[in-house]
Image (cartoon, rainbow, N blue to C red; front, side, top):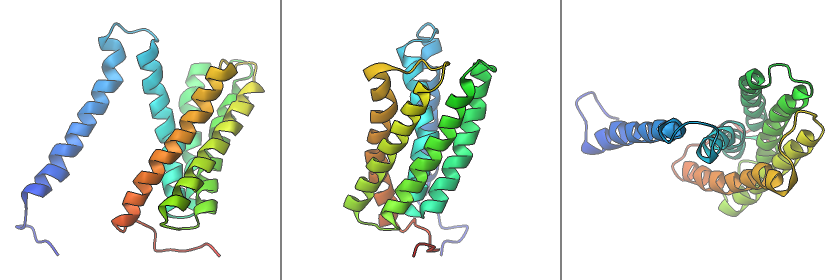
Length: 195
């Protein structure tokens, strides 16, 4: 156990310098569109997509993999709801926007639940990657399919499919590696509710 006098250089590097550098990098990337002239360009679209993927795919996947299906599904529901509320301002009651907004909630919930249901608390990297990639792909397919049911949809065609589905598949692979790192360092839930 560490007392208040026991500090090391690693505490400063990993506790202050690296986290602050990561936050500053995120701020820089987020402000990049306005620095480069504003508008809704490719950089702004990429930044927005990364934010969406972290909130409604990455976090539910991590919780599903390292904890269980209920944690993954519940976090997906909560974060999907928050993301839908954030996007509701963009649509401002545009006809057909309700389908898109509920799609964010259902997709995120499904991603977290499937990841947990397939992984079942395993720390096997192969099982984690199969579970996460399957969950991300299924959630992306549901999201893309629900988008097609809305008159407010602008995500269509092969590019829309790639943006919606394949990005979530890729997030599944990345999150599996991150979750395996969590498992290696003992960051898993001790509560087992899986049969």
